[in-house]
Image (cartoon, rainbow, N blue to C red; front, side, top):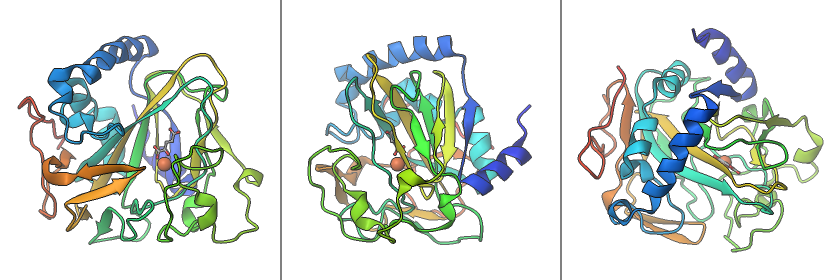
Length: 293
Ligand SMILES: O=C(O)CCC(=O)C(=O)O
Ligand SMILES: [Fe+2]
C-alpha cells in the first residue's frame, strides 16, 4: 500500500521524495539489458522523433519505454502530487560513465535552459502550492555516492536560488559544476550563497527505484568514480493546463537542434480537458499508450 498522504507531505516540505520502488533490481537489470539493444536498433532509431545525440523522447519509438512511462507506481504518485490529469512531455537519458564529472547544481521550472528565455512550459491554471512540473528519475542501474547518484537541497524549491530566465550561453565544455555545458553559477541570485555549504541529500538507489522531484528543488549529481556506467531515465510530466513548447516549431539545447514537427505529449493519467497540446496517442509502431484514469 502506498501512503500517498505521507509522500505528499514529504514532497511538499522537501521538493523531492524517494527512493520509491518500481521494480525489483533483477527485473530492472534484465529489462534494461534488452532496452539498450532496442535503443540502437535502426528500426527504432529511424522512427525517433529527434535525430540528435541528446536522445530525448525515445518513449515515442522504443516500445519498452512507451510502457514504462505509464507504470501505475509512477502515475499514481504524479496524480497525487499534481492532480489527476497528467501529460508526459519529455523523457531523457542521463548516462554517467566511469570518470565522468558530476552534474552541476541547477534549478528550473519552465525549462528555460540557455537561450530559450520564455521556457518550454507555460502554466495556464496554476494553483498555490501545486507544482507545474515533476520529474521521476528512474535508476536503470544502481546509483550510489561513488558512481554519481543524484543530490538535492531539500526545501530549496520554495525559493529561487538561480534566475531561471537569465540568459546563459552553452559553452560546450563539461567542466566541473556546469550543467552539461551551461554554467548555472552565473545565474545565482545571491553570489554569496554556496550550494555546497547547504544540507545535501544524496539519493542512492537500487536498480528499479526512482525519485520524484520538482526541478525547482536545486539538484545535481556526483561524479562517477566507479568502473561502471550509472544510467538514469527522467520522465517529465505536467498537469494538462500547462502549454508545452507553445508556439515553437524548434529549439536548441545543449548544442543540439530539435525540430518539433513530430513531437507530441502522452496522456499518462486522466483526461485532457484543456486541449493545449498535441497528443500522441500511439508510439511510432502504432502501439497505443496507456492512460490511467
Ligand atoms: O542525472 C543527472 O546527472 C542529472 C539529472 C537531472 O538534472 C534531471 O533529471 O533533471
Ligand atoms: Fe535537472
